[in-house]
Length: 243
Image 1: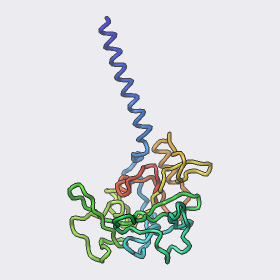
Image 2 (image 1 turned 90 degrees about the vertical axis):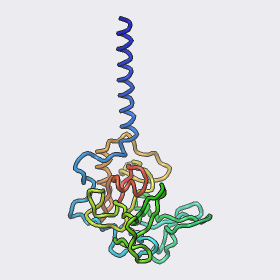
Image 3 (image 1 turned 90 degrees about the horizontal axis):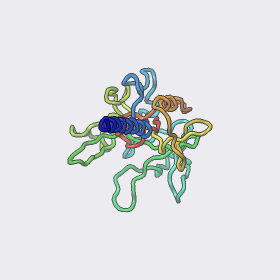
Protein backbone atom coordinates (compact mmCIF):
# COMPACT_ATOMS: atom_id res chain seq x y z
CA UNK A 1 0.00 0.00 0.00
CA UNK A 2 2.86 2.36 0.88
CA UNK A 3 4.49 1.65 -2.50
CA UNK A 4 1.29 2.60 -4.31
CA UNK A 5 1.00 5.83 -2.31
CA UNK A 6 4.62 6.64 -3.04
CA UNK A 7 4.12 5.99 -6.76
CA UNK A 8 0.97 8.14 -6.84
CA UNK A 9 2.78 11.01 -5.11
CA UNK A 10 5.65 10.68 -7.58
CA UNK A 11 3.27 10.88 -10.58
CA UNK A 12 1.44 13.87 -9.08
CA UNK A 13 4.80 15.57 -8.54
CA UNK A 14 5.77 15.05 -12.19
CA UNK A 15 2.41 16.45 -13.33
CA UNK A 16 2.87 19.50 -11.11
CA UNK A 17 6.38 20.15 -12.48
CA UNK A 18 5.10 19.76 -16.05
CA UNK A 19 2.24 22.24 -15.47
CA UNK A 20 4.62 24.71 -13.81
CA UNK A 21 7.01 24.44 -16.74
CA UNK A 22 4.22 25.16 -19.24
CA UNK A 23 3.08 28.21 -17.28
CA UNK A 24 6.62 29.59 -17.12
CA UNK A 25 7.07 29.07 -20.85
CA UNK A 26 3.88 30.97 -21.61
CA UNK A 27 4.88 33.80 -19.27
CA UNK A 28 8.35 34.38 -20.67
CA UNK A 29 8.04 33.23 -24.26
CA UNK A 30 4.54 34.26 -25.25
CA UNK A 31 5.88 37.38 -26.96
CA UNK A 32 8.22 35.40 -29.18
CA UNK A 33 5.66 33.41 -31.16
CA UNK A 34 3.54 34.33 -34.11
CA UNK A 35 -0.20 34.82 -33.50
CA UNK A 36 -2.47 31.99 -34.53
CA UNK A 37 -4.17 32.27 -37.87
CA UNK A 38 -3.17 32.20 -41.54
CA UNK A 39 0.55 32.16 -42.27
CA UNK A 40 0.33 35.63 -43.78
CA UNK A 41 -1.68 37.11 -40.89
CA UNK A 42 1.17 39.48 -40.12
CA UNK A 43 1.53 40.52 -43.74
CA UNK A 44 -0.38 43.51 -45.11
CA UNK A 45 -3.32 42.90 -47.43
CA UNK A 46 -2.59 43.23 -51.13
CA UNK A 47 -4.03 46.76 -51.24
CA UNK A 48 -1.77 47.96 -48.40
CA UNK A 49 1.00 50.26 -49.73
CA UNK A 50 3.90 48.49 -48.06
CA UNK A 51 6.32 50.82 -49.80
CA UNK A 52 5.02 53.78 -47.82
CA UNK A 53 8.00 53.48 -45.49
CA UNK A 54 10.30 52.43 -48.30
CA UNK A 55 10.47 55.03 -51.10
CA UNK A 56 11.54 54.08 -54.61
CA UNK A 57 14.64 56.24 -54.42
CA UNK A 58 16.08 56.35 -50.93
CA UNK A 59 19.23 58.38 -51.65
CA UNK A 60 21.65 55.47 -51.24
CA UNK A 61 24.82 56.34 -49.32
CA UNK A 62 26.49 53.13 -48.14
CA UNK A 63 22.95 52.09 -47.10
CA UNK A 64 19.42 53.04 -48.13
CA UNK A 65 18.65 56.42 -46.63
CA UNK A 66 16.32 56.17 -43.60
CA UNK A 67 12.78 56.91 -44.78
CA UNK A 68 11.44 59.28 -42.13
CA UNK A 69 7.68 58.99 -41.71
CA UNK A 70 5.27 61.80 -40.94
CA UNK A 71 5.76 62.86 -37.32
CA UNK A 72 9.23 61.29 -37.11
CA UNK A 73 12.30 63.29 -36.03
CA UNK A 74 15.81 62.13 -36.84
CA UNK A 75 18.01 62.09 -33.74
CA UNK A 76 21.61 61.31 -32.85
CA UNK A 77 23.42 60.52 -29.60
CA UNK A 78 25.73 63.39 -28.71
CA UNK A 79 27.29 64.41 -25.40
CA UNK A 80 25.32 61.74 -23.54
CA UNK A 81 21.98 62.98 -24.81
CA UNK A 82 19.65 62.67 -27.81
CA UNK A 83 19.89 65.64 -30.16
CA UNK A 84 17.28 66.47 -32.84
CA UNK A 85 18.61 66.79 -36.40
CA UNK A 86 17.44 70.08 -37.91
CA UNK A 87 18.15 69.06 -41.51
CA UNK A 88 18.62 65.27 -41.69
CA UNK A 89 18.68 65.31 -45.51
CA UNK A 90 21.75 67.54 -45.72
CA UNK A 91 23.39 66.73 -42.40
CA UNK A 92 23.69 62.96 -42.66
CA UNK A 93 26.16 62.44 -39.82
CA UNK A 94 23.33 61.10 -37.64
CA UNK A 95 24.01 57.63 -39.05
CA UNK A 96 26.91 55.68 -40.50
CA UNK A 97 26.58 51.98 -41.31
CA UNK A 98 30.04 51.54 -42.82
CA UNK A 99 32.41 49.04 -41.26
CA UNK A 100 34.80 50.62 -38.81
CA UNK A 101 37.94 49.60 -36.95
CA UNK A 102 39.41 51.12 -33.84
CA UNK A 103 37.58 53.38 -31.42
CA UNK A 104 35.18 55.01 -33.91
CA UNK A 105 32.11 52.82 -34.20
CA UNK A 106 29.39 52.68 -36.82
CA UNK A 107 26.15 54.51 -35.98
CA UNK A 108 22.64 53.17 -36.54
CA UNK A 109 20.02 55.66 -37.73
CA UNK A 110 17.66 56.56 -34.88
CA UNK A 111 14.41 58.49 -34.90
CA UNK A 112 11.68 59.53 -32.46
CA UNK A 113 7.93 59.71 -33.06
CA UNK A 114 5.59 62.31 -31.59
CA UNK A 115 4.62 59.98 -28.74
CA UNK A 116 8.27 59.90 -27.63
CA UNK A 117 8.96 56.35 -28.87
CA UNK A 118 12.40 55.54 -30.29
CA UNK A 119 13.03 53.69 -33.57
CA UNK A 120 15.98 52.25 -35.48
CA UNK A 121 16.29 51.97 -39.26
CA UNK A 122 17.16 48.53 -40.67
CA UNK A 123 18.36 49.02 -44.28
CA UNK A 124 18.04 46.38 -46.98
CA UNK A 125 20.92 43.90 -47.01
CA UNK A 126 22.10 40.53 -48.27
CA UNK A 127 24.15 38.05 -46.27
CA UNK A 128 26.16 34.85 -46.46
CA UNK A 129 27.27 32.46 -43.72
CA UNK A 130 30.70 30.88 -44.01
CA UNK A 131 32.47 28.96 -41.26
CA UNK A 132 30.03 30.32 -38.66
CA UNK A 133 30.75 33.88 -39.77
CA UNK A 134 27.99 36.15 -41.14
CA UNK A 135 29.02 38.63 -43.82
CA UNK A 136 26.69 41.52 -44.74
CA UNK A 137 26.35 43.59 -47.91
CA UNK A 138 23.97 46.57 -47.94
CA UNK A 139 21.91 46.88 -51.11
CA UNK A 140 20.74 49.83 -53.19
CA UNK A 141 17.05 50.72 -53.11
CA UNK A 142 15.03 47.57 -53.92
CA UNK A 143 17.72 45.90 -56.00
CA UNK A 144 20.45 43.30 -55.55
CA UNK A 145 23.18 45.85 -56.35
CA UNK A 146 25.93 46.63 -53.85
CA UNK A 147 27.39 50.07 -53.14
CA UNK A 148 29.48 49.82 -56.32
CA UNK A 149 26.34 49.15 -58.40
CA UNK A 150 27.48 45.58 -59.01
CA UNK A 151 25.28 42.48 -58.67
CA UNK A 152 25.92 40.47 -55.53
CA UNK A 153 27.43 37.02 -56.02
CA UNK A 154 25.31 33.87 -55.88
CA UNK A 155 26.57 32.95 -52.41
CA UNK A 156 24.76 35.98 -50.95
CA UNK A 157 21.05 35.91 -50.08
CA UNK A 158 18.78 38.93 -49.82
CA UNK A 159 17.39 38.76 -46.30
CA UNK A 160 13.74 37.59 -46.47
CA UNK A 161 12.56 40.55 -44.33
CA UNK A 162 13.09 42.78 -47.40
CA UNK A 163 11.90 40.42 -50.09
CA UNK A 164 8.64 39.86 -51.97
CA UNK A 165 8.55 36.18 -50.98
CA UNK A 166 5.57 36.11 -48.59
CA UNK A 167 6.03 32.41 -47.79
CA UNK A 168 9.47 33.16 -46.36
CA UNK A 169 8.33 36.17 -44.35
CA UNK A 170 8.51 38.82 -47.04
CA UNK A 171 5.96 41.28 -48.40
CA UNK A 172 3.96 41.75 -51.58
CA UNK A 173 6.89 43.75 -52.96
CA UNK A 174 10.59 44.32 -52.37
CA UNK A 175 11.31 46.98 -49.71
CA UNK A 176 14.31 49.23 -49.01
CA UNK A 177 14.20 48.90 -45.22
CA UNK A 178 11.99 49.23 -42.17
CA UNK A 179 11.81 50.90 -38.77
CA UNK A 180 11.89 48.77 -35.63
CA UNK A 181 11.34 49.97 -32.08
CA UNK A 182 14.56 50.61 -30.20
CA UNK A 183 13.17 49.55 -26.83
CA UNK A 184 10.67 46.98 -25.61
CA UNK A 185 7.03 47.96 -25.40
CA UNK A 186 5.76 49.76 -22.31
CA UNK A 187 2.19 50.81 -21.59
CA UNK A 188 0.83 54.16 -20.43
CA UNK A 189 -2.55 55.87 -20.43
CA UNK A 190 -2.29 56.50 -24.19
CA UNK A 191 -1.39 52.95 -25.19
CA UNK A 192 1.96 51.42 -26.17
CA UNK A 193 5.20 53.40 -26.14
CA UNK A 194 8.83 52.36 -26.73
CA UNK A 195 10.99 54.24 -24.25
CA UNK A 196 14.20 53.68 -22.28
CA UNK A 197 14.17 53.12 -18.53
CA UNK A 198 10.58 51.90 -18.40
CA UNK A 199 9.04 48.61 -17.31
CA UNK A 200 8.33 46.29 -20.22
CA UNK A 201 4.69 45.46 -20.81
CA UNK A 202 4.14 41.86 -19.67
CA UNK A 203 1.36 39.43 -18.76
CA UNK A 204 -0.08 39.85 -22.23
CA UNK A 205 -1.26 37.21 -24.68
CA UNK A 206 -0.09 36.85 -28.26
CA UNK A 207 -3.51 37.93 -29.51
CA UNK A 208 -3.51 41.06 -27.34
CA UNK A 209 0.01 42.02 -28.46
CA UNK A 210 -0.96 41.47 -32.09
CA UNK A 211 -4.06 43.67 -31.78
CA UNK A 212 -2.29 46.44 -29.87
CA UNK A 213 0.55 46.63 -32.40
CA UNK A 214 -1.94 46.88 -35.27
CA UNK A 215 -3.76 49.76 -33.58
CA UNK A 216 -0.73 52.01 -33.02
CA UNK A 217 -1.57 55.56 -34.18
CA UNK A 218 1.11 55.92 -36.86
CA UNK A 219 -0.35 57.23 -40.11
CA UNK A 220 0.91 56.12 -43.53
CA UNK A 221 2.70 53.18 -41.97
CA UNK A 222 1.97 49.53 -41.25
CA UNK A 223 2.78 48.84 -37.57
CA UNK A 224 2.67 45.15 -36.67
CA UNK A 225 4.05 42.53 -34.32
CA UNK A 226 7.50 41.61 -35.54
CA UNK A 227 7.65 38.56 -37.81
CA UNK A 228 10.14 35.71 -37.55
CA UNK A 229 11.90 36.93 -40.68
CA UNK A 230 12.29 40.42 -39.23
CA UNK A 231 13.42 38.95 -35.94
CA UNK A 232 16.25 37.27 -37.84
CA UNK A 233 17.18 40.55 -39.48
CA UNK A 234 17.28 42.46 -36.22
CA UNK A 235 17.76 40.04 -33.34
CA UNK A 236 15.34 41.77 -30.95
CA UNK A 237 12.35 41.00 -28.81
CA UNK A 238 9.20 39.99 -30.64
CA UNK A 239 7.24 42.32 -28.41
CA UNK A 240 8.38 45.24 -30.51
CA UNK A 241 6.24 46.34 -33.46
CA UNK A 242 7.92 47.52 -36.62
CA UNK A 243 7.01 49.77 -39.53
